Length: 389
Image 1 (cartoon, rainbow, N blue to C red):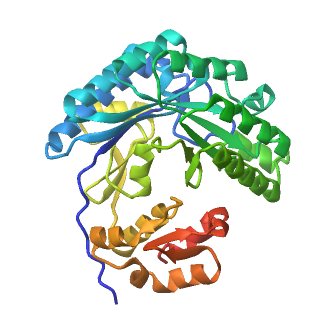
Image 2: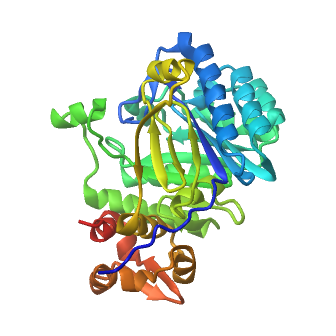
Image 3: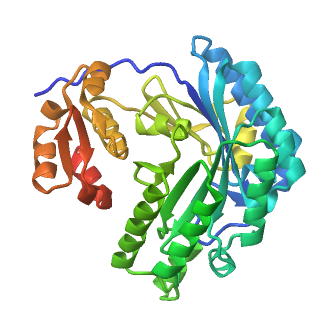
């Protein structure tokens, strides 16, 4: 039986901050987000800052952070000064690299030029705009609060405020969406020329409004074949426009890959702060209390706000590194895998990898294990093969 060493994971160089508030809940959303909690804003930010400071004291040996990411929810529902205070706490507590990537997720309906200018001046240097669609009919159908015009305005305001690194999120396979609709959206976004584009196929998640509607037969969703056509169309359109397709769902102009998300895909360590946030430190994955009120109460009582945690060891840890790495189109660098873990990936997963190769889902080439085009379209099948039983 193979002995899987509990190899040392370097200290985190990234931090994720979760803002669990939003104006309204979109029909498809299963993220940890809550509308109607404006009265908790002050207490939540105070608790969040306290968690950041306490964690910083416990990890004085941590190297400087290369990326900081504010996600949600909708971080920009918070007043501007609150967001700036949180970023200041991060900067006061941790050593930030001179070129630290500091990302803020924003809903176009919650920003204006003044807010964006203040946030840019405070140090936020990357903006992730949750555009999702540039068609008002589809935006309304999925419950977004903004219009296509507001999305375009937000992008222009961000540019004029000094943001030179802007990402746009889009969702495809929406109810009643056709390939023509999708191609129109792609061409419109390419015309805007953002640095980064993320594409996500609509998924129906348990507990959401869309799950209920789907069960009742009230969602007219594209079939699987059309969904694949849309994905293929996106790859063709964006690569032809000069974007690098570097991860299953992500495309970037040269030099603008998401630094923060690559931490996850390389299965590296990161801090997580805020209600529902996950951290991965010293080989331990911890999830904070998802309820914002309970999170604040725990911090105020000086208790650990962690709801659950697990130490990833052995074969599970190695499998996760492979699965995450295979999301990158460049694949897993087998030498780096061996240097990081002390194990040979091919030997450790010989049976599983052989099966994937036989089925045409992965290939071993030039020192890398990577998915084929077929595997790219069937990533769930690839992951299932590698998950230890």
